[in-house]
View 1 (cartoon, rainbow, N blue to C red):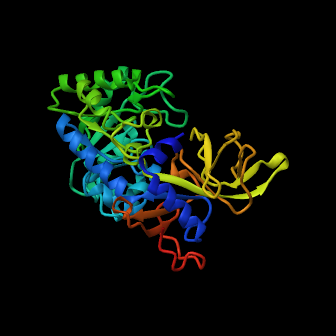
View 2 (cartoon, rainbow, N blue to C red):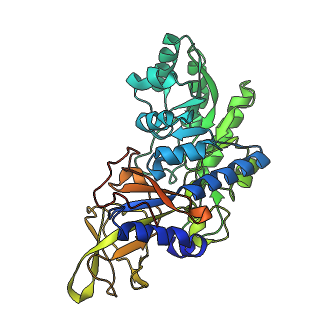
Length: 395
């Protein structure tokens, strides 16, 4: 999906990833991430958001909640949007500040005292029970916590497994009840996804959910709230910030923009964010008719992966489709010039935190002096040094 783009705009990363695998510094099933490119993308986004009067909460699930990358991003975008309590703990420990916590996954009630102690800018609540739990926990800490109301998405726009929120028709009643809770203050509204980009399209567009959350924002303003927040996550990148500003958003939540891998980047190499990761693995064995089987583990089902590069031969081999319900022990390629042990480099859209992959962070690529600065698991925990990789410092 992104291999042509990364070869055109960040070829050093491809060469570095191949060399790290060739020398044994990284194992098959590893995402190699360009630290310099991630930080440059964060700086670019911060500057662009300032021009449009927007605040950004960065998202890190897609890069494996990686502490090195989190610290680099936080130097420019200091506050994060964490999808759940576990992610919030990892990002907080890395030194980032809590922005919006609990949007996609509600904070478990027993974890609220811990999360509230970090003084997050906002906690998203889906219903009155969760609002009451936040209020009670905040009162125990003698403070008032700002909350965002998650608005129920428009039909046909909500991803399965992400259902929930307050229906627009029930917002007035919700607000009336929540306003009687002494430990919280209604600070704004949010929903997901607010912006989408159809596959192959260069034109992002607002969803029906964005329209609902805009109407909810108007209702809160009419109730007397001064400048309530409106966070509109979904394809947040430099190209969509003008749209967010035009439609009244106050916040965006960039994730894949940090690695130059939004759907827009797949079809437009001129997007300002640079591609910042590749996936490196190895040919495990050959099937009948010469079809190579790659070691798997990181093939996210919605990746849109198309081809693999075999650096030894320069061959570009098509990646064959595989059912999402099957475990990706291997991924098959079309027949071509490859043999067991060969390195394979791919580039596609992922969510590293749901894979079993390793993450290798490389610094110095932007100045031509790459070095492997750390290896982590898919949830951001440091990995022990391998015997094969000992002394293999990079390309």
